[in-house]
Length: 168
Image 1 (tube, rainbow, N blue to C red):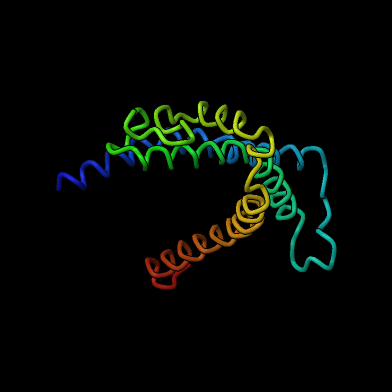
Image 2: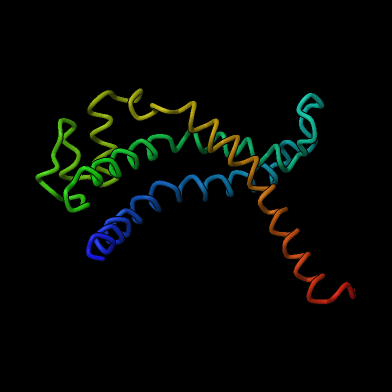
């Protein structure tokens, strides 16, 4: 029980870092989709070779790919902060006992990890993992979100039909 409580506290301590790293991606993606729609860009469906991808889906994937690329440095910093916390004996970001060769465990905030990554290798380090992030967050996740929404609609419709016993 005591160990489980410590694990819950350590997980709760990570939430601000996770939110600060992912919120710009999610908000930026939604704003970019709206901006693309309002600007009248991608008003027709994607090229025929892309299959059934409609204009809205194409805008969503394009915005997700762009935002995944732009927010890669935040993802790098988030990963470094979470790794540093996992190395700390108490799961905190301020444990001096957890300082490692990277020097980030003792001060594992998102901002400090961004600066440390830049100091370590400049812009290339901030954008390490760009291709996997763009492929996963930009293409796979963006492609699955509409499917997930359709799944929720199907479940909702099934529940409505069951409740109404087939009556409209």
